[in-house]
Amino acid sequence: MSKDLTNSSIDRKNILNNNIAIQEVYEQVGFYGIKHDGKYRFTKQQVAQYYEVDIRTIDRLLENHKTELEQSGYELYTGQKLKSYKEQVVDFVKLAKEKGDVHDINVVNILQLSENELDSLSKSPQLSIFTYKAFLNVGMLLTGSEKAQKLRSAILDIVIDVLNKKLGGKTKYINQREEEFLPSAIREYNYRQEFTNALDFYIVENKFKYGQLTDKIYKSIFKENAKEYRQILKLNSKESVRSTMYSEVLDLIAGYENGYANSLKTEFEKSGRKLSLSEAHTLFTTYEKLTEATLIPLREKARSLMASRDLAFREALHEKLKDYINEVSTEDYDKFLGERSMDLEKRLEDNKDVFKRLKDR
Image (cartoon, rainbow, N blue to C red; front, side, top):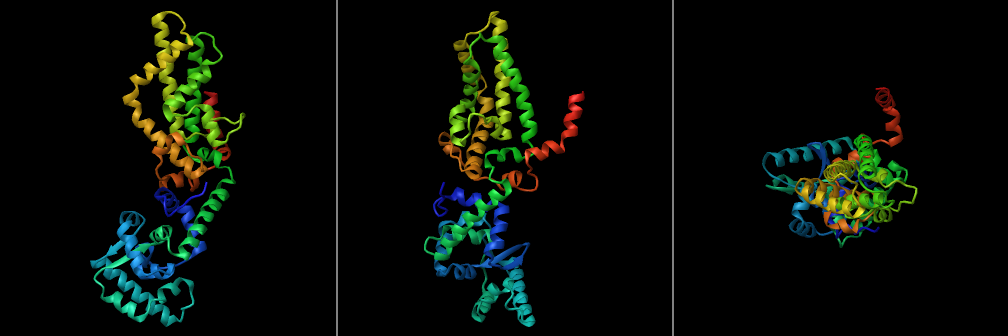
């Protein structure tokens, strides 16, 4: 699925929120600035020089995309913050020249500032300053710069490469890498047993009841039945649908299964007989309406997480959920790709003693 970063703010934010990919971009692309307050900073002049555009082009971007660029780290320095930055730049340049270290890649871009520019820097009452992310954000927005176009292409290649290296190409099961997947999968499995038992005990024998009522739950939560979900994620007939679902979705499915199973039991006890499949469908509609107000916030969250993560991580578009697509947060990237993430097999191995204790209870 091709991405046009110049037109998609969500795609831009997804990349900028991916700190693992950004670090790789930094190492491969370079462009170094002054480290100030823990981050590399660049002046508007430096950014314009890098992309080989007139500084007025950067001004127009700031005017048209100010909020987005501020979110990615752009700031207008004034007062004490500006004074501190100016002093750091002057000290940096002076020290580099004294050491004769002008070929070091970390100082080349700073020393490209002419004497007039340094003089202007010292006199300016305010200064447009970009972090590395804001610098990349500019490159994602610029349409008239060949360097920006090449940078966008490099960024997209690096993002894909990072994802493949981290996951070994197995994006289908990226959901299993977060800490909460395993306990959520176990909980959902237990409630699934209660759900299927309820279908056995309280609905007359019918081979279609399991699939049809499971699809009722799926469609209520994320608007797709199991077949549609399989097609979107390209799952074969032997691959488990729920093994690809995120923990939040599994928790909500468990809630539906438990609540509906209880409704079946109540209706069975009230009528003193098993329900027909059509009556079970009607009961589900009633259950759905009764729980609507309670479940709306959880359902909205589940839809947004599924649609957004699958588009970013799996390049899978849930057409019926496209209105719920948002950027993937930095926390989510860390959850699925960072140090907290882990292959399910390794997590199972690390927790085998816990499972043994549970089994021996």
